[in-house]
Structure formats: structure tokens, C-alpha cells
View 1 (cartoon, rainbow, N blue to C red):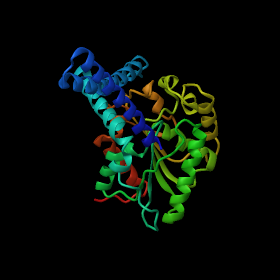
View 2: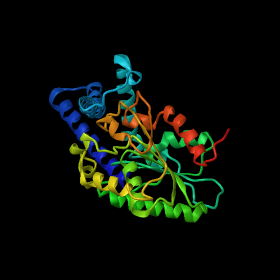
View 3: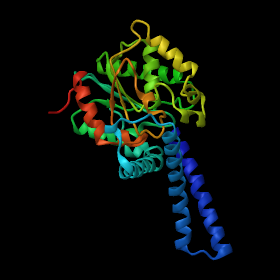
Length: 311
């Protein structure tokens, strides 16, 4: 559904660009080269502006970085270009064409292996995980499930209930009572809410990646009830922390975060005082998910949680 909506929106965008180019051809005599430049410039430039704007806001609200987390001017330029490339791939490819670019989920059949469940974040779908699934499966990790969750603008509690239903489905099919959950961005909040609402019984370990555990200022610029819940100091975040303080409200958790996140700001919002935290500098919000550096953090963590990994 989200993929279809994205394709429709991008079709209208392309039609509008072509209409403008044809008008300039008729009114100003623009040739094919200039017309093509206009269309490509709009598609690439508008997305460049989005990444630049989010990076500027995140820099203004940045968490002070430790000396070993600083990457310098050249490193900052490489980071920006890497995040821009990752955003282009996601926005133009992985989001609208996820059914073509990411293999279907395996059937949940009986297995002796601990399943891994990937949870996407705000206004995203399973296409987000194309590179991560391929890299983890190349390391022998499986079965890996990466479903689409439909709660794009709904409260995070609704997302949490969908996640719980998916965990129950996987447990019933595989015969494995628990799965390791890797959750990106808002998906980490949904996973925590799932544990708070339904208990920790179905989750062997939680790994969050770039999750705004204490909110992000960029949520104030987004739409949806879930965006309001991700604002710093929201009632949802306070209630979630209170629920986790009770007995059985948590599972063993690792938070992987980047001090250069361009959508979670302040970046230390991704840190949890009661969890283990690993910083991976030099990546933006989307680039971190697509990085080999993330895989190198995940593989030993998955092994320690009982997931079989090829030697």
C-alpha cells in the first residue's frame, strides 16, 4: 500500500516535471538536453534539499561528540554524500519497488534456528532492509523476516500490536518461542511498546538501530500521531519509560546509534541508560542501515543471542 502510494506520488511528480519541460520547450524553445536537465535536476535537487535541511537541523541540535567520534570536514562531506545516495536509493527504489528489490519473506516453517525479525520505521517499508538482508544472509543468518507494517501514521501502540501479531505468527510457524528483533528508527519504539504491552516472552533480544528513544526535534516537522509521540518530552515516551521500570518490562537490549544521525537529534536520544549502547560514527540515519559497519556489530550480537551464523 505504501509502495503503491509512493509510485503514484512519484508518477505525478514526473508528469508535472515533464509538463513544465514541454511548456518551456514550446514557450522558450528549450531543447531535449535542457528539458532532461530540468527533470533530472528537480528529482535529484529536491531530494538533495531534504537531506541538506535535515542535516542542518540535526547539526544545530547535535549532541557534543567525543574526540574519537569527530570525522572532520572531509569526513563530513563523505557522510553527507553517503546519506544522500542512501536516501535516493530508498526514496526512488527501495520504498516504491520493495516487492521487486527484496526477496519475499520465507514461510514460517518448523526450524531449529532462532528467527530474526526486522522492523522498519516511520513512513517506510520492508524495502529499507534490502542491503541488510542480503548481507546477513550471506553470513548464514536465517530465517530472516522483514514484513511490512501498515501503521504509517497511526499511534505507535497500533504498530506495537501489529508487531506482536507478527511475532505470534512466526512463533506458531517456526516452533521457536522467541525471535531476535532488529528495529530501525521508530520501529525501536514500537518494539519497546510491544514488550510493555504484551510482555517480553516472544523476544529473545532487542537490537535498535538509530531509534529516537528520547524523541527527536525533527518529529515536530513530521505528520501523524506517531510523529507527535516521537517529539521530545511526549506523554507516550514518559509512559513507555514508566512501563519499562516495572518488573518484566524489558528484555536484553542493544542500541546501535550514530553520533552523526541526521533525523534523530539530539543524537544521544538513541542511547538507553539501562541498555548497552554502541556508537557507529560517520553514518546518517539511512546510511547506517545500509552499512557494512552495522553488520559487523550485528553478527556477534546475533550469535550471542543464539542465532546461528556461518563460520
